[in-house]
Length: 295
Image (cartoon, rainbow, N blue to C red; front, side, top):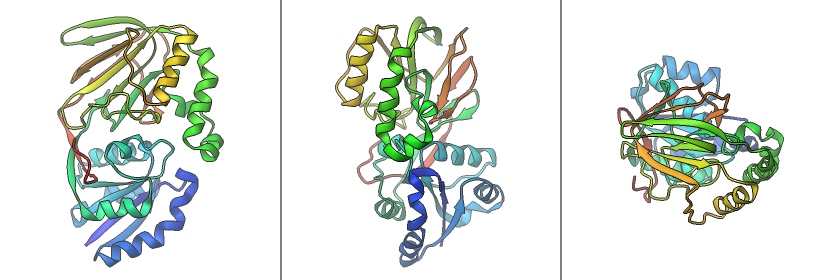
């Protein structure tokens, strides 16, 4: 039997490189031949040209952005194969939601158990995402955090950059159109979640489900610097957040509009342009999950 590992050598300070031989041996001991493909041209050609029905799974070693690219390519080439995760990004929000540890050896053990689960695959403007789409100047910190800080400080780099950005946060007017209601609000940032968290804030919506055919929308209204600082602290320390400054709703189809040039982010990478049309509940993708994952 075969399996493949697509690895992003730039993620996690390149730590995956020194583990490749051990991971191949672990798979071999289970009767699985593990093929290695570097993220980029190698992985693109593999996903495009190979008959993936011959593979037990494809493992992705990288962050949410690496998973996003793999999923979108599989859909582009109309191919289907279970995806396993070997977290090596900065935040690894999606892997956390699936119960996958940031330890290559333990993560490969989970992959080899092959406990499969179909996860909703939402889209924005026709492009698929796995975990989060963000709008504004706070949640999309991954775009503004210098790469050398991510390499040196990991998740702490996001918090450092967040504190730096707080004083620069400005509100912007957006319109959110759902089937049942239209919201028009001044917001400082907004996230559309498939999972529970984003940007290292892993429990923004603690009861969110990845297979319920719905997305969770959190819009943070205009607030002063003191209120924003308290909110940032609450997010960091995973406290329960109840505030009239936050709009929260679930939906399967909705559109977000803005007349201002707001930044967008999808799974940690630059996102789509407005208007943003979100859909979920129509497609799914199969991931290998841990024993403690329950939807």
